[in-house]
Length: 388
Image (cartoon, rainbow, N blue to C red; front, side, top):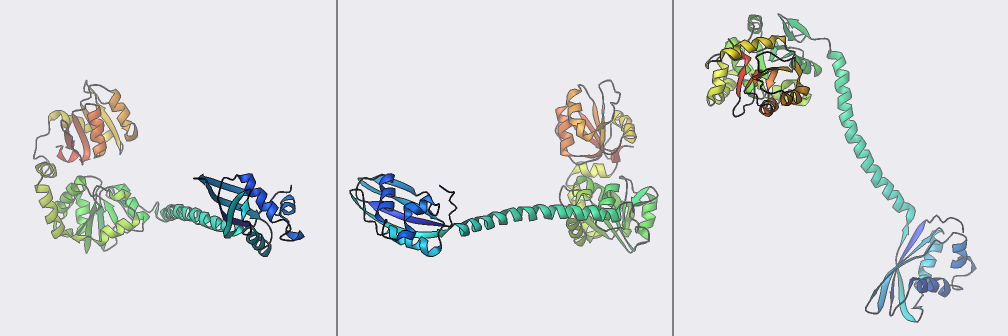
């Protein structure tokens, strides 16, 4: 028998008054249509030549009656297939039982396969498009970074964009990575404070501008820095912008940066809101005033190790008071867990909830960071702004 590749599928329903089996149905189909359709459409001959495929019969019996479905595949043309379908409906007995066969539909197999292909192709295309949109964003960012990388410069030790000195407007951010991220999206007039203390050179630069915007992280550390900038610049600070809650400027996407800067507020109005927030937290106010609480001498002594740390690196003050080797942030958790009796964790970056979790895990009673954005019961936290 040659391989059958059907173009159409005849779907027919069958009902019989009595008990019949599949072989009875198949026998009736081939036997009772023989001679009815002429020599060209003899089903046995068509099946031997592969023009008619395997007849599939599914039957269910219930209370002495049988019902089910017949599937008959055909590779004949439309007219011949329709004639065979009509011939099936002439069968009125199967074995000793009265029966009725009715064709419900003749299905174009190629069309069904085509629709299946189309539906699946749509799904695959959407996956490609969705992945590609992210890829294209990444590609655009990488290409854009080629144009802007290397254009950062410095002024009095502060990283800044190439237009920071000559532009009429100035954007003040916290660190070098903030400047680099803004450069990636074409903003070239930003300058970084490079720490909590605002330099005299930045104060003088701000005085020469018609517009000065402080753009800081959307956390406690960002608000502390804003208070520092506002106090140092006075009326030279014209506007304030904050990153979304708990997000950092260096990690913001271009559309978010545009939105934040577009929603900047007048400095007087913004700082009034921020001071009210800060005044509701005595600890924040103390940190902002540099020394409103007394920092223990041992903490002040250990703070000298901060100068030897790279950004996002840490060290532990061990039980005997000596410092450990510098530890990258990615390895800090395991190191802190393995060391017993550490007295202090010093971290050259913002102290986040994760850093406090590591301190808790290592039973470390003190944490000193560049800035502090998290607390934990039983652990004292200090920022470099509080160190005399």
